[in-house]
Image (cartoon, rainbow, N blue to C red):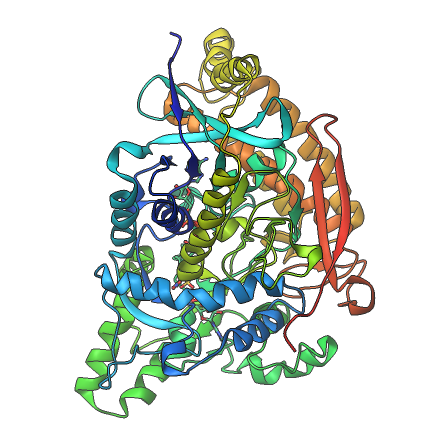
Length: 619
Ligand code: SFD
Ligand code: AMP
């Protein structure tokens, strides 16, 4: 049956209601009181995205009102952590505004830990502690209240962006479908902010079988941000970068609270602290090796060196940390122990479940940690994403083209995981960057008041393409006795497994301990090409849920392709511990301290690769 079609006209369209999307919706309505701001989210905004389960810390807070840190300090920290290459204008811009977002969260009801003097309790130099189980509902409510419930479209996945037929270099809206009803949506807008998060499960995860789907980052973040914007010709940057988090094994519980707040150490199975015993490895990577704190990739590198030397498992010494901090005081120990459980219950419930299932009492025995599969994202300790304009007051001309956080497609903005070369935003910085993008998007609407056109033939073609997997299933379902296996089609789960195997085998997944080279990447690209062809011709779906999974898979595959193309282009190992080019094993500052950028040409289907200069703005 043909889906019904709903056309939604707006001024500012926000796609993806996570941290950045909620920040964008809130701020767009603040500056554009008379504008129609529409937010589209594929799940329920109250519990969607990376913060769905809550968080126990806000990782970016400078404490400028107490004179704790300056935006310049932050730029220096972030630059070093990502081994010397970041867009300092973008990082600085987040830093100077991020505290105000945290103050809003508190005003809206988020409980933040306080010291006796009323300051926020620090987890580490940049991080503060929260009771954050309800972080996302609090933030979502603010966004929803700002734009009005009638402008929030939930359970609608956006699959493609639309160009303006009169100016193909300008965005005109987006299309998608309801995951609850047989309905196709056409969103028309003068400016579009895409904030669909990063990309998970491109690589074979460490979780298998009954644990499949357990990842560290949000499984809802499927690369839509990168794929949809690349497809309309927006330039990308640093897509070769990824984040490999060290995490509590199998439950993916974060380690920050243990290392920073509880001052724990991690050791190998023989009790050696790899940060000490493997410290010589850091000398290969000067000047980054001697930086304090040791950059995240290099911390990984030291752990990996121990694992490859056969000294695993690696353990977080929770028992020693709690004993040391409590100093023999039983009451103190009990309170620390409950903080440890709450840390996971507030943001990675599965890790608490795993502790219970494996009879682990963190005060009595250590827990295994390991390195996870790669995640492509721009908001945590990774910097993949889109190449965007910086703010007019601090961006040099090379980094500025009119509107803050606008991509190279006119009227198309992004924030959070979507912005490349600007890492360490985390939840608070992503929300802040959404606000920054929205302010500029509102200005864009004011500067371009004319009606926006949409190419109806293109829309009709997209509608047919989006729903084709239903037809493919209907037509071919008799060709085998079980629907999961069929010579004529590919269900999304089978396609996802194939993508993950390609990426794990050839693109430096955890299966090769993050190693690859040019021939491996080239072969991976060939296999990705064949996968894309099959997805085009033979993707099948039995219901709306599978149709959603089909389009998530397409977005993941495009993101994977751009990751591989970028890795091929960067002929060095910039982030040891994230991935190694075995044919170019060193950090090569002389030739590669610059950004790798790419652009897909929608007219020809060709990818253009190149570089852009890294400019130091903060001494
Ligand atoms: O411990 C579509 N993060 C942490 N940040 C912190 O500040 N403190 C922490 O403690 C953090 N840690 C942490 C974090 C994340 C996770 C998963 C864990 C632990 C377990 C990072 C932040 O959460 C992250 O930086 C931001 O949330 C990024 O914001 P944003 O907006 O870029 O992504 P999102 O919030 O995931 O939202 C994306 C939204 O888009 C929707 N979506 N909607 C429509 N159509 C499509 N095609 C769509 N595709 C996606 C999603 O549903 C989602 O709502 S710790 O590890 O350091
Ligand atoms: P994580 O729990 O690993 O996501 O980290 C939370 C925050 O703590 C992030 O800002 C990390 O960069 C930081 N962090 C985690 N581990 C360390 C460490 N060993 N040294 C310095 N910073 C860390």
